[in-house]
Amino acid sequence: MPTKPWQPRLASASSSPPFPMPSLIWQILQSRRIESQDDIQRLFSPQLKQLRSPLSLDQMEAAVARLCSAYEKREKVCLYADFDLDGTSGLALLKRGLEILGFENLCHYQPRRLSEGYGLHVSALESLKAQGVQLVVTIDLGITALDGAQRAQQLGLDLIITDHHLPKEQLPQAVALVNPNKGTCPSGMGHLCGAGVAFYLFLALKMKFQERGWVKSEINSKELLDCFVIGTLTDMVPLVEENRVLVKHGLVELARTQRPGLRALLKNLGLWGRPLSAQDVAIRFAPKLNALSRMEQGIFPIDLFFLKSDAEAEERVAQVVQNNEERVALQAAAEALAEERVLALQAESGETPPCLLVWDESFHPGVVGLVATRLAQKFSRPSFVGALREGMIVGSARGTGLEPGVLAGLERASSALERFGGHAQAAGFEIHPDRVGELFAQLCDFYQSQKSCEGAEVEYYDASGRLPEVTPQMMKWYEGLGPFGAEFELPRFHLDELEVKSLRELRGGHLKLELADRSWSQVRMEALWFSPPPQHQVLRSEGLRPGRPVEVLAHPQWNYFNGKQTLQLILEDIR
Image (cartoon, rainbow, N blue to C red; front, side):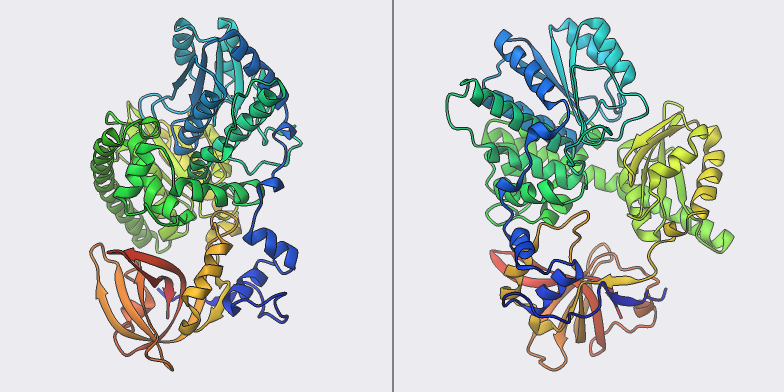
């Protein structure tokens, strides 16, 4: 497996920075075309005053008016949220926000991922009506819920839909449809996730309460950003504009959260008492929470958000860890089988098909999305993975980050499907087992005709330098560049003139290296290479051994261990 060619994302820097900064940082800024002093200032110091008005969201005024009426009449209000971490964190955010404003008659509902599935379910609405609910506010769902909205109207249930997903041709009937992506919203805030829309609903409601003199004390909206940051980072929406500003502040709020459940989980993971990065949340923290909804074993993500005491939080976090260990085992078994199937297909046909479709009776429905992600990353193909449930295959699809995504593929193959929906790069589907062959054929035809689905032929990097340039001082600038995520990816460094000083394999097949600069051998740094491809050219040729000169693509990060903070590299490629 030869490495792809490496190229700088932009031609080498030809101008000087507007003020002194490390060369690696200036190269990153130039690679992203951020070169003026004003743009750099906004990047490093985003201000909350940069945010657009929440009332710029279409029908926000109607949503606020109906909630004000519910508050005055002390009506029972139900917050109905999606089961994923976007919906869950949005629910926790809005419920706390409404409580701060003085709402007392609140309840919440989330459909179960495995037993109910996504959506605004008629049976749930009928149950809520029987419980005396008069107003339902959705979070992260509802924009395609024509049947649910119609049934709510028949029941006399008022409905406010807040969502960020793309609509279908017809919009549901509701008191208000607050969705920046519904096609008629002038706000320009289509980058918001479901929790983001919920936060803006709270901000608009707070403004109205202040106008009416209903606010009894100072309200700090920033305390809700611990939830905002979880929803935004896990839903992989673009880290631009409002999202960038609020995630930057939200990481600070999450690092000092007053929610006992979140605090206990951060402590358990060794993330408490230090600054948090977007990668800490997305890679280490969020998957532990997400496993709860995937496994459905008596504890759910929202439970951790709502815990009141530290003692109960510690007990529940122990359950979270155990639950996640079970999820990891199920995921590993499914990944191994799925990869075996793909490799067998490669051997049979002599090439990798333009997309991947794998399902098995042994797959747990809660991990199919994770397995699809793994396949898409490893084979650079749109991946569709399903599990058999009650006679139907229920699956998840993940894209490679390139266009066309998986939703476009499902739309093209919709004639074979019972139902489907989701985002461009992450979607769900349901199909009868007898029609899987038909689905795979249609998907292959579609992706074969799309050149861009083959994956990038070049590995791009943002900056090039030497190991002595990766210093604690440089890291202060580097951390100031963050948060990193969708559409503002983690910068990739090309570091040359290195020598392998030591090498050992860790559990799970990961590699740990010590690298030294060839001119300044006293400048050394540990480097981790997670899940290196066994067929990688450097490994096959035994080129990775002490004494060998190498160059790497990597990003730096702080390692916190035993109370010590040290710099390390996370390798992405090596030659």
